[in-house]
Length: 209
Image (cartoon, rainbow, N blue to C red; front, top):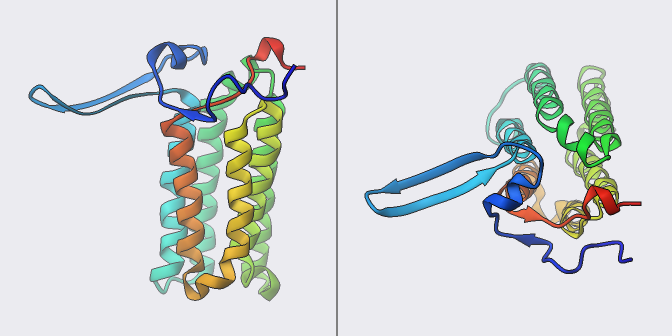
């Protein structure tokens, strides 16, 4: 048996039956003007968790790039937002990971995010220069690890590719010089939105080993 479900594309457009296959009630988003449909799709709870994180990450990376706000003030604000994101992630995805028999993936992301948060805050409040100058690499690395292990856990080429994209972004960081925060935030946010917008491949829970 193949480790991946190669009968489907890594990413594909959603349809209602596919979303319902996630054992969750989908959230239908539909915009139209008159008879002209502008946008219509369905989001599962796991999709919403990705969207929540994407929205929270925007101010976290835009602020240090464009605004002169104290690092300690930012540490407090972003720590609070990160805890909100973690709570939302647990609430939205716990049923999905239980059904798919990958509850460890949720614990993994929680541990990685908390570890990154603690290390970042310590670096700011204790003035650890080696942390401060490598914040973008630190977070790209933690997120890459999360995607790679999660991709192996659910047998998904799309999630694995997302992890490798974050590793590649670490190599690109020196090339973007003073725009590292904006670049890092863009990579993370776009990745989350793509995963939320499309149906990604994975093996059904009943045939995972």
